[in-house]
Length: 289
Picture 1: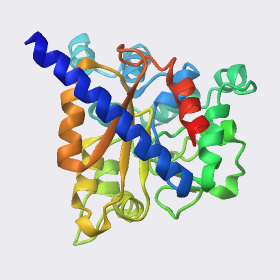
Picture 2: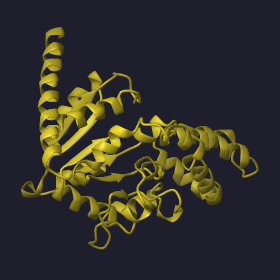
Picture 3: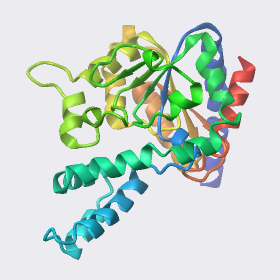
Picture 4: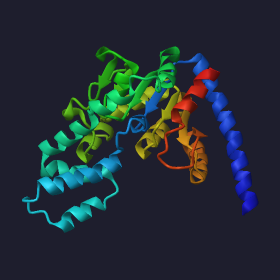
């Protein structure tokens, strides 16, 4: 068993080096899509959706005490791991409170102003500016616009998606009607209805069949993997995923490579949600281009 473990780690190291070389060669020559997730806001102290949902439940429990909801109701809600299931319920209990709490949390100027003015995000800025790379994000906050100092006219926001430098495929914080944070909105954005593909899925199919993609600061949702899978072999591009190093993820990475053609590059700590090495690693990549 120990020998097999060493062999797995050695194989992964070889794959890591090869995948890194492949990515750097592509970055030298082409414009690529940077698919950015919650890892960027996490660096600034913003919660991920799983953390936020638990706090949101407590806010609702306190402010909606007279809404005929007992402790059992709130306890069962808190036990749900899928934040979308929780948001489905809370948005129906009080839609105004739901929007208010999300807006106040993810439009937090204090968190933004405390860090953005220094140079910690310069590696990300350099990566974006290589060959005019562009960003797709499932985040609703405006952190990337502020970090990169991009004007508003270089952004597109669901459902009006057209390729710009920053593309908010799940909506943006200042436009609650665009948020894809509940099941109904998710179905609207991704699923087929009357032989018509949802606008998010249609947009991603087009991008993923025309550009190489680098996934950063995010896990890759099953829906995204299915979109990559559905692209014809003739139109497939190169897909890379930079992920925090973890022994448990090696097998999953090999599976993703075999089934979807996603090449994983591991970095840094083995601890989940530790993004302290993320930007130094991006800097290392940029310096080799």
